[in-house]
Length: 225
Image 1 (tube, rainbow, N blue to C red):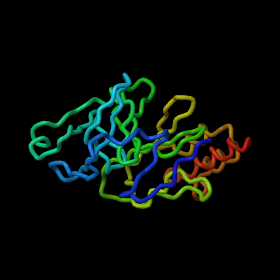
Image 2: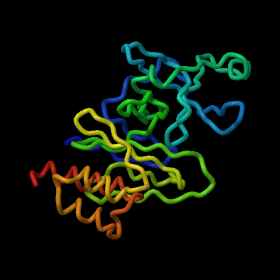
Image 3: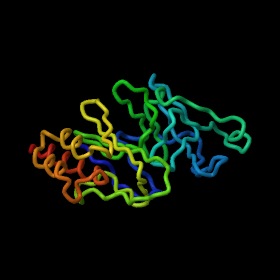
């Protein structure tokens, strides 16, 4: 199993699940706000589903992005470029975005066009990504177990509208807060002990604990249990 690199604070790099692409040729390493001041952009690489790439200013300061489309800017960046020349791309045209050490991927659920670009957190037999809708009610993201860290996002906050996405054998599934115990325990059925803890809603095995639950499953699976 491949573990992600140690995670740092929000202002530091977060690892992608694969080796990051070389930095864009543009040497700008500054974080730039958009015209609203709510989204910040850094130089990064967007890979389309056809394998072609775009190097430009990509959003990087949120735990995922929704809406089905993504806005980015091409260098050189200026106020005029932000106000008059933004670029947009549909999320179903994106394979991945590597920016500031983070990996964002569109969540392709069965029978649905992707409308969420989630932040990749964990790699292993089960991989995990998260998208948090911007809300005013912050909840701290629980840290995964020491010794098998996924991404302890010390500066990230989850709201009451966090969405966890698990992927196994190439199939992406959202595990919603509603019916979490039932759905997640069924998803982990090949580890009866862990599935039982989730089904019984034991402390530290709830929806907010999803990174630690996935980390525990992956560790046990790698150990051959």
